[in-house]
Amino acid sequence: MAYKINKTDGSLLTEIVDSTIDQTASDLTLIGKNVSGFGEFINENFVKLLENFAATSSPNNPIAGQIWYDTSQNRLKVYDGAGFRQGSGPIVSGAVPSNLVQGDLWIDSLENQLYFYDGTDRQLAGPIYKASQDVSGFTVDTIIDSNNSEKTVLKLWVNGILLGIFSRNTIEFTPKVTITDFSGTIKPGFNASTLAGMKFNVTSSKADALVDTLGNLYTSNSFMSTTANTTTTGQIRIQNSTPLILGANQNYEVTATTTALAITSNNAGQNYQIKIKNAGGTRDAITVRATTERVGIFNDNPAYTFDVNGDARITGNLTVEGVTTSIESTNLIIEDKNIVIANVASPTNFTADGGGITIKGSTDKTIVYNQSNNRFNISESINLASGKTLQINGVTVISGSALGSGITSAPGITAFGPQTEITVDNLYLNSNRIQSINTDGDIELEPNGLGNVALYGSPKITGLATPTTGTDAANKTYVDNTVNAKALALSMDTTGLNDLQISNYLQEIAPAANYVLGTQARIHCTRQISTYASTPLTASTYPSTSGNIVKTYVAVDKVGGSENQPVLEDIAVTLNLGNSTVTVERTTKLFEINIITGVWTYVSTISGPTIT
Image 1 (cartoon, rainbow, N blue to C red):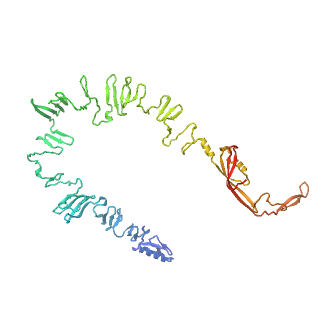
Image 2 (cartoon, rainbow, N blue to C red; image 1 turned 135 degrees about the vertical axis):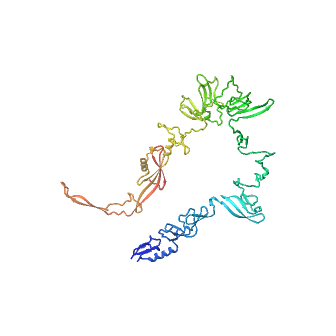
Image 3 (tube, one colour; image 1 turned 120 degrees about the horizontal axis):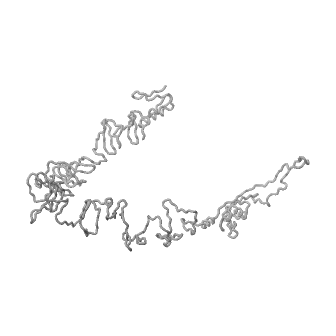
């Protein structure tokens, strides 16, 4: 009868048929009735329960409430139906755990902070700053002063930087040991650190005094009142953008910036005047008319934007930015040597485009700058006087009959007439010859990238010398001599052959006509030798066959012929030669193409016995 295995809540876990086991419903082996060897399964189940399924990986078939000892983390974990969660102690990880329950503690191993889970959300237990933020906030510290007394203080930090120290001690004291990022004594209240630019950017309703950058204190007696008449013998510095406003109705204001000092009228149509007084009385020296926007010099009613009554002299530069400048003088005399045009605030090639000189005629004669190709366009031909040259940077490029020495390259020339000779650096070209003119100079061909030196029309390269290095090109004679002079290496079965016969076979294998005189051949020779009764078998030692061969005949009739003609019926051999031994003799023979006869000729036996 099958076993029905129920869980604690009464639900069916699995049903085990007789004589079977179940190892998939849970991580224990569940045993059916009449299972052989059930004791081993029971004992293993006890061991797994004792060690809580200890392993580096979680059990394969967990059920809710199952305990697993994770040996990779040395922690006890419990299966909650969805996954294994830590059974005791805080959870340490660099990421937020996904299966937190109320009361769980989580240590963020990346930021070194402790959280607890209240059933709804994570709450930070401390510290208030993350590890990536470094020390931030308040820390309580005990400082030993110069009198060896303990002083309790509060330090304020941001991102590991000390901002200052709060002290409740009514008497300032000096730390016995220097504090990093702090200097001086510690006074009651807040003491700023040495952080550059350290300030409290807040509004203060009261202050005992003001302190300057040198530490000097200034009380209320050091300042001028804004509600009463004040006299001072010192300098008055008004350091704001509108330091002074004049007139009952704020008619004028004086503004000052780092780049300009301005006197501005706040009334429409109000003129600006600067008056002087001399022997003739008071006069208007400078008059600025608001409605006509004109300035007069010793002219209180200017007719032009700038109207000078009297001679004008400019000892500095004069810049005229109008569209047209008209000079109505008969002669224009300019003492300066240089005329600058298109002189704008930020000159560029674009602002210079179109600048130049125009001479009026039936058609305009122009010298004009074109920024698109960065050159001057001249509308007319240039005619140099006889004997004059065109130069660039003082070097002649064109004379009346030749190119000057300043022409060192001509990339734009695609064709020129026949030349009798050309010298380029160390190369001299004349007739059909390219020749280097420097002593022992090479002539080099260097294709670009993967290009080759290609010859067309199947020409020959002649005149090559005998090579001396591994990268030298070889001529045909050198190659032929090298190949032909190399000794041939052959092997041959020479049983029954003498040296002359061997040389004849060598001639058939490697005709001497294909090699240079003196070429050598080394032949590894093998010869089989049979011995009878320990004596080589020769014609003189071969046993006689007389009396050892018996022949029998039979008489037959010939069709259409005579009768009883003898015909050989059988042969019996009674000869016994005894035991025979076959050995192989190996030698190396040297042959050479005779320089007189031109045929292969035996020279010597290099190794092994001489065989004739």
